[in-house]
Amino acid sequence: MEEIVSLADKDSIDREFRSCVAAEVLQDFCFEACEFSACHFSQAGFRRTTFIDCKFVDCDLSLASVDESVFNGVEFVGCRLLGIDWSLCNASLFSVSFSTSTLDSSVFDGMKLRRASFQKCSLVGAFFNSSDLQEASFRGSKLKDCSFDGADLRRADFRETECLNLDFSSPKLRGLKLDMAGAVALVRRNGIVVD
Image (cartoon, rainbow, N blue to C red; front, side, top):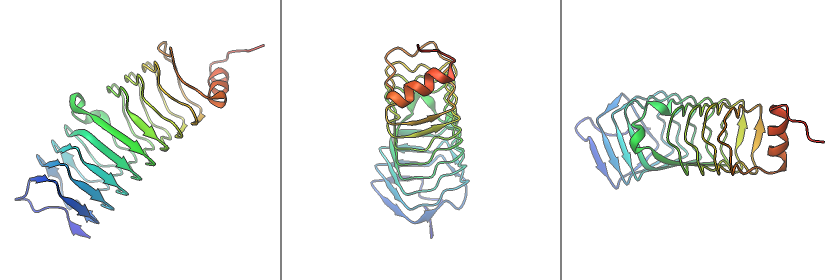
């Protein structure tokens, strides 16, 4: 594996990075229209690093630190993103989509995630407390032991998900989309009796 960039090269536009590692904390770097494939950034530090219109494919960012970083127009496909506290990002510019990725134990508390896409992802033990998830899609994802306490889930799509032990303590559920299995799980979890 090669080091991602030299310290002198803080701005990268329209570049491809393959099988790279982050050898140190990347602070004040900017990546625009870049693609990262099979890169290993596990436990890496991204401080005030900006990713605009970038794509990560089959990368490992597990336990990465993303303090004050920007992820705008970023797509994650087939990535391992375990234990990341996304709430530490620059929230005003956070716009991402996730597909076939593992985001277990990730934290999205208090974030604006309207229309966010989590397609066929694993989100075991993830936290979405007090987040704005209006029109977000979790289709085909595995949601187990997740917390949505106080989250705005209006018109969110939970169809075709594996929902186990979810905390939906939220008055904002109007228009929530569930398939039959998800509806039954929600009813049971909340002690609702249907005769």
